[in-house]
Length: 307
Image (cartoon, rainbow, N blue to C red; front, side):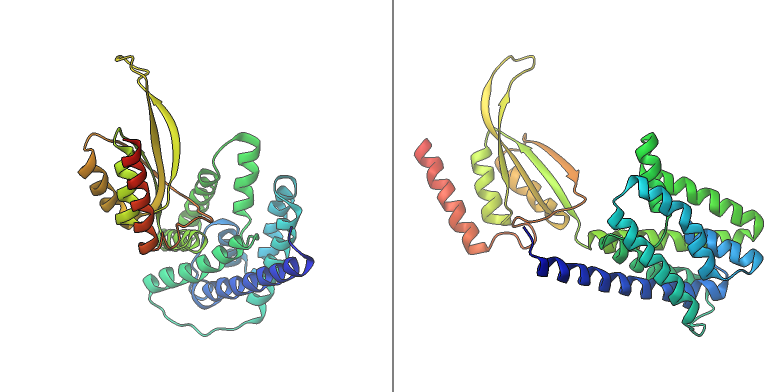
């Protein structure tokens, strides 16, 4: 159980990081996108489009267009997230209203890239700390909860409609640059939330599982989970007890993993799958090499004893 002091420190840390996210997002909007008439996706994109057409204060539009999505979120996500999101959206609106940046560049390509970069980093930091700066994520959660449609698909459809309207109402060029901005924003948001390390899960089924376990620890230093399996529920009708190796590694080590396995058993059955999030374990730094070799030697000795 977390103490009151720990919870307070954690809450303060979250709000400080959300504030940093708000500053980054507002730089992307005020220093790049707004002065040049570019749009982003989601509720921010709607506010920018309406502001371009009717010249109503962008801060007011952001708050007004966020209200329906926050109401949706009240029924689908936790009240704590909604409270944080209200604070975040109001903070973004106020920051945009009061801050003033000079035009940094007039190059449309640079505007799309750096506007999306700052905005994506800001949105990502906010989401990572349990808040949203754009209500389209809440819309995705709401529709997913009601109709089972994936959140990513909902946001994609939402933005396709928005950019199509932009192409007809404003211009095709603005719509195309806005799509580029949205792509950069989405990618940077993902990188901010998930980090730059790309992890991958591996499941290995082989008769030579004992040797493979030893070599993975010795050469790669990766931790693993071992499952007990039974084999032969097919045409051969054989039944054989064996170990199933399950491990998670950085994607840069995948070729080395395949080499380790193929050197022992080139007929091994290997399943590779993407991993969205990892917490705990020895994954972040893998096993210490010396400890890994000691553990590998211990496993090898036990294997010989069994034989």
